[in-house]
Length: 105
Image 1: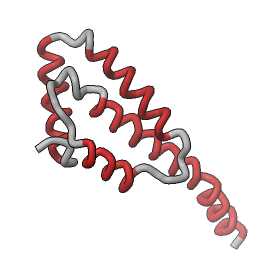
Image 2: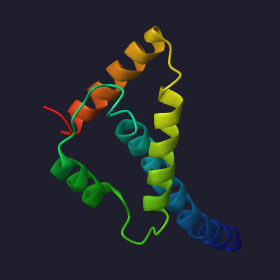
Image 3: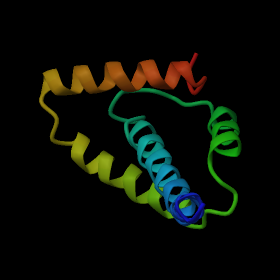
């Protein structure tokens, strides 16, 4: 029984950290897509982005917006140095993801 209580306590302690990490990953991934809008010559549906954030970003994560902003800006800087082949591959992946989530038609 003590072993079960210990396992339950561990899960409860780890759960908030896991949720925070998942939120950070979502901000990083969305930041990659948003930060690639210009270099990939895309125009995103602003309402679709807002809908995605409403559905996926935790309301209690005050760091989501700052992580998203930092990632978007960082990706824009990295994209400036892409070779033509890397740009083609990157934009193909970003376009596919953006289309999947309804950011573009």
